Every structure is written in C-alpha cells, then in structure tokens.
Amino acid sequence: MDNQRNILVTGGCGFIGSNFIHLVAGIRPNWRLVNLDLLTYAGNLKNLEGIDEGRGYRFVKGDICDQALVNSLFKRERIDTVVHFAAESHVDRSIVDPDAFIRTNIFGTFTLLEAARSYWQGGTNTIAKPIFLHVSTDEVFGSLGESGYFTETTPYDPRSPYSASKASSDHLASAYFHTYGLPVIITNCSNNYGPYQFPEKLIPLIFNNGRNGKELPVYGDGKNIRDWLYVTDHCQAVVEVIDRGSSGRTYNIGGNNEKTNIEVVTLICEMLDAKIGPLPDGRSRNSLITFVTDRLGHDRRYAIDSSRLKEEIGWQPSVSFEQGIEMTIDWYLANQEWLATVIDGSYQDYYKKMYA
Ligand code: NAD
Ligand code: DAU
Image (tube, rainbow, N blue to C red; front, side):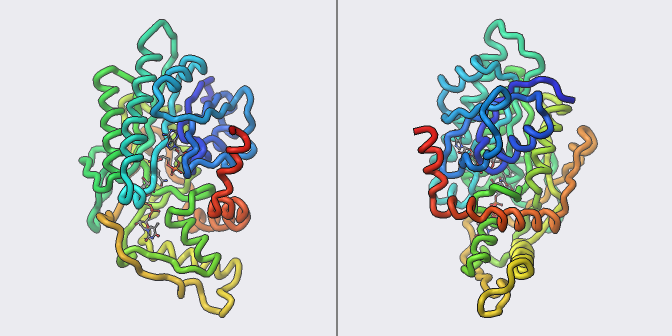
C-alpha cells in the first residue's frame, strides 16, 4: 500500500515524530510530509539530519495553536492526512508547570481539528480518504494494579496534568468524529524508547548520568512498571494504521515488555559496564543508583493489550526489550555529540542560525 498522501506531521522534530519521518522517508516514498513544529525545548532539527527539504519533505516552524497558520497550511499543501504528535510530553514538567500542557495539548489539538473540519468539509475540495490520526498515550487510562491490561474500552482515569490534557484532546478528537463525521483515528501507546529521546526521560537520563558517573535517581521504591515499546515499532504501527485503520476507531499500541523501573536502570548499568568498562574506581554503575522522593501521583503500573491492532491491522511489536535497550545504548554511545549539544543547550543555536 503506497498511495500518494500529503501528510501534516505535527511535532516532527521531537523524539517520536522524527523517528516517524525517518521511517516514512525509507518505506513510503509517495508520502509527502509537511512537518509543523514550534521547536520548543523538545524539538531538535538535528534529529532530522539526512531528511532534505524538497518535493517530499517540508519543514514549517510554527505553533499548532495558530489557527490562521494551520488553516493556510491545509490549503496550500492540500493536506489529506494529519499525524498529530506535537505535545508537551513530560509528566514531571506537567506537575511543576501545567500551563503549556493545557494550551498545546488541548487547544492545539482543537485548532488542528477545526482546520481539518474546515478544509475537508467546508468547501469544494475533493480529498479522497482523509485521516486525522491523533497520537495519544496509555496514561489516559490511569494506573493498573498487579494484574490486568488497558484495552480500548478501559474507562479514562487520567491522574497527572499531562495525562488529563491528553485525555481531553482524545475526547475532543473523538467528539469531532461523532459530531461532524471527521475521519479521526486515535492511537494510545505505551512508553517509547530509542534514538533521539530527550534526556529528561528515564532511559536517556540514566544512560547519560551512568556514562558520566553521576547519581541515578529512581523514584520511590523503583517498582513502578512501564510497558516499553521500541520507537520504530510504534512508528511502524502508525504507518499501518494509516494504511488499514478504520475511521472512528481507537487502537492501543504496546510493547509486551513490562519492566519495573529498577529492572530498567539495572540493565542499563550492566550494559554500560560491559560496553565501556566500570567506573574509574572499579565499581559497577549500579552503585550510583539512588532512591529519591517519589513523583507526585506516580502511576504504579501500565500494561497494554494491543490485540485489536494485531487482529484488525496485523501489527505486533518486533523488538524485545533486551534488543531494544542494547540498540538504544549503542545509538547514544555512537551519538554522544548529539547528546552533548542537547545537554548544553547548543542544539537550539542550530535552528536559530538557520531560521533567524
Ligand atoms: P517530544 O516532547 O519529544 O516532542 C514534542 C514535539 O512537539 C517537539 O518537537 C516540540 O517542539 C513540538 N511542539 C510542542 N509544542 C508545540 C506547538 N505548540 N506547536 C508545534 N509543535 C510543538 O514528544 P514525544 O515523546 O515524541 O511524543 C510525541 C507524541 O506521542 C505526544 O503527543 C505524546 O503525548 C505521545 N506519546 C509519547 C510517548 C512517549 O513515550 N514518548 C508515549 C505515548 C504517547
Ligand atoms: O506511558 C506513556 C508515557 O510515557 C507518555 O505518554 C509520556 O509522554 C512519556 O513521557 C512517558 O511517561 P513516563 O512518566 O512513564 O516516562 P518517564 O521516562 O518520565 O518515566 C518512566 C518511569 O521512570 C516512571 O515510572 C517515572 C520513573 N522515573 C523517571 C525519571 C525521569 C524515575 O524513577 N526517575 C527519573 O529520573
């Protein structure tokens, strides 16, 4: 399946969006991508090195909350598909300072839905099979006990400002399907990891601190569980949902890789010790693990049942956690300059020079 599409990718300079663009450039040459990204702290043009501006790809620096800009992009680029990644994505930041989460995640999604409604339904445009794919999270379902899985019918129970803002945007997207017949698809996925992830998130943070012999902060008792999904598996699922998903449908995307945080941190320490040697004083990096005050409202366990995606679309994850974490560590070891420019903030100079 490789029909021509004009896709508006929002947040394509972030972690998952940039992996999506790299994947699509390789496997869907007929998909034209327009990347709309505000380049917040989480957006990094270096994530897209090797993706050249031209017939198949265009970058637009801008805000998804800017209705006039978004409307004009739909029209000028004849957008028939939206893959909406742009968001404020980090739970800890949402606890300290929720404003941007409400604005971008709720109002930004609303702005895009309005633009799609106006362009796809408001005039004489003939857009074949449009799709508005809203990328969301398993965090909207709340927290699981020791057993059970999130399915597409699990009631929403968001518990952080981040997950509440994503839940709101899911409800808006769903309402636009039911009220206006807008061809909305929602995907709810579990914790992604892999190349280009900003080092505020657990895995790259532990890599970076472990590499530099710094403290490894583990919240609470370290026994919270996440279901880890290798980012390319997630992006492949998104491609397949665009190919074969049904309008108005929700799909859960999970990695079948439930791990406690302490298991994740210990594995990274062991792999780093094996690949670059122990600390200068001969100790393992495990000795750097420090249990710190727990995150407020910290959800205990997430686990996804993605059988709908397997049965209806034919997708399942292909990367085990052990494979994925090794690929991730190897990528960060090979791309220490990328990491250094993110840590010292100089990655932002790059776009200032290009788009000043
Ligand atoms: P990220 O924080 O790495 O990237 C977000 C991107 O959005 C950045 O490039 C940023 O510049 C851009 N952006 C932010 N505000 C914007 C605005 N107002 N206008 C235009 N662009 C803006 O996020 P990510 O981890 O790649 O997550 C992408 C999506 O996937 C998010 O919607 C997130 O909720 C969802 N998600 C992420 C995970 C995960 O584990 N990372 C899991 C489930 C769902
Ligand atoms: O489940 C999907 C969600 O996964 C996405 O919707 C979010 O955008 C994404 O950020 C991620 O949220 P988490 O809060 O689960 O990811 P984070 O990497 O921040 O934390 C993973 C776990 O590790 C979590 O239980 C908190 C814990 N943690 C995190 C950090 C940053 C620590 O113990 N120490 C830390 O320093």
